[in-house]
Image 1 (spheres, rainbow, N blue to C red):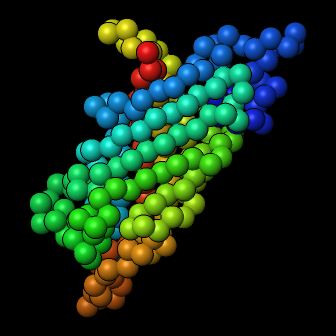
Image 2 (image 1 turned 60 degrees about the horizontal axis):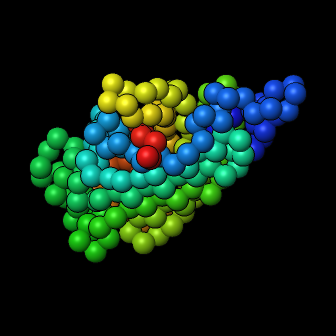
Length: 201
């Protein structure tokens, strides 16, 4: 579906030039539902295993335009103090001055600047990711999971996304050397998103 990309302008029209109703029907403003969404990450630990975590407190919006996909956009704000990895000591360390400095920089933000179709239900959305006051571009690969009305009458859309970053690009450089070689925490971090958004009234 050509939800995001202007490259799909032809795909959202019929041979007579009319907009396909299933795409036009998605046009609108949506609010991300944190109760049914996850924002997670995976980091390599001690060179031998993966540590998974996520953020429990975040807000976000989507603007989808099925008739003019280039007008679609996304915005996300994440509370850094809400990080959870299943270990309280590790969570405290991640919030500290060694990593996210959550007291000084309480929020991580993403603001989209571009979106494009990769074919089928696959998309790429690019934007500005700000961590520790540093803003750098981030590209997220997305799969559109569809749209539906839930039992409570909410109109929902769903997306799954993934990306990879080097945390050092945002000034997250703390590490510790291992006696056997290598470092305690990988520079490369895998990000994953599972988003359910509700259409605004």
